[in-house]
Length: 329
Image 1 (cartoon, rainbow, N blue to C red):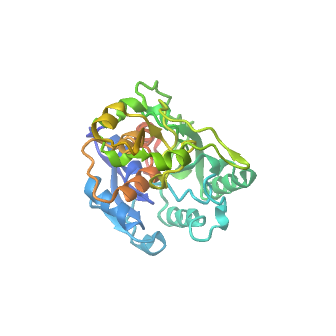
Image 2: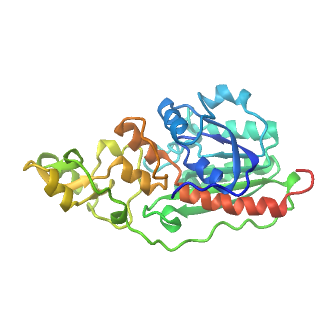
């Protein structure tokens, strides 16, 4: 989606685990004032500064949390690897990343944050037979928050990517007349992956005859999955796209025009997505500047929050706050 200039800007907001700013852009478009952002990845911070705002601090949140300014809203796509089916599913046992939720708890307890919006993989609701998610909700409720949660598929909000993510919206009861929070309704998808493909793609994105057999393989032993290409709704973009997994996991397309234009005999008419196509599939604007390597760009878009989904949630949240906040805000 293209950039949106909101009619009004209010409600000071901090962003944790900001990545390249997909979460932040959606909230900025809706009128929230991002006053502080943080990520530990220097390349993500580099991209954020070039495309979102200079207002990001690069460093570990455990070291930087003492510098957080006063705020009304906290948003964060806290690390999902401990809960993802593509990870080791260690959850809170992952000492480096799985316990970062408790850093969030410490921050909102200290600042009495009025609204908390968290994003993670869908599997966080199923991890450890649902106990992990129950623990998260319990910890928030113990601080006086009323929680609402929902699973979003990016394909239901304007981009042709099958990407399921869990959103938690928590309101501090001290500041709200709590009413049911209605998550944004699904939108009819009007475009396909093919509509977003770049018009000029060089030879190096096309598979060689040497590797195509592996990419199009069905797997081995107990892991047999049918390869698929040219999907109108893309598979979930992943942080490891640069490694080029099999076509059962990553996205590949045929591209006759560029194949004929650029490719030699050692190539076949199957190619991976370009970083720019991944940008479009995550809802980042057309004036986006790539300031990192392709490898880093793939990782960043694979880790990102889909801007369209963030914006849809933020718009509903803005309306809810305006309607339900108490006079002591």
